[in-house]
Length: 193
Image (cartoon, rainbow, N blue to C red; front, side):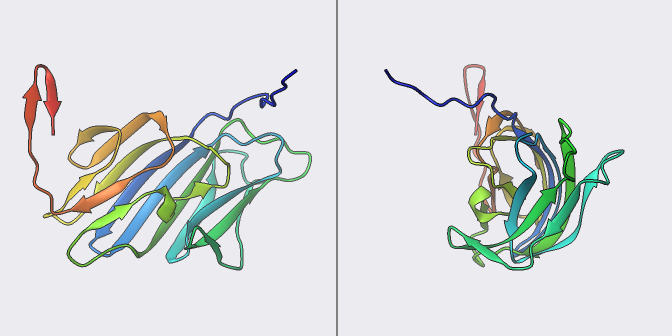
């Protein structure tokens, strides 16, 4: 007899509403993050690159002041990347809301930036708050302001020259920017880039 452990429920994907300004080697970002907390856990851990200065963080919504975002004092290292961890906590005997919305404003230096080659960021760079939940999928809206001579690329549906939406769950959010040449073509009714 084979038995498999199957979780009683799967968490819905987190949602990031991410606005990013890139100035060649620096980043300034605002992320409004909606999580769906696991009712069995008392806290949520979020990870952000340690080189980013968090200007403010808060829990949004009426009657949400009982939920706290607390930065940990020590820097950690995940996969060779220095990170700052934040614990989102709730009082004992208080259930999590179905949707918990957090806002982070932060800025800092982009460490994988090379003077002539633009930037390439992903969830593994912790350029946005990443949950500690294994296999936590996410949806997102990403709006980017970059130097005029740079083109920005991400996954999802391109809404205009600087905004992407992904309603399909993803594992991470990519942000790639450089001086690219854009080539367009059509194959039948399909626009190719």
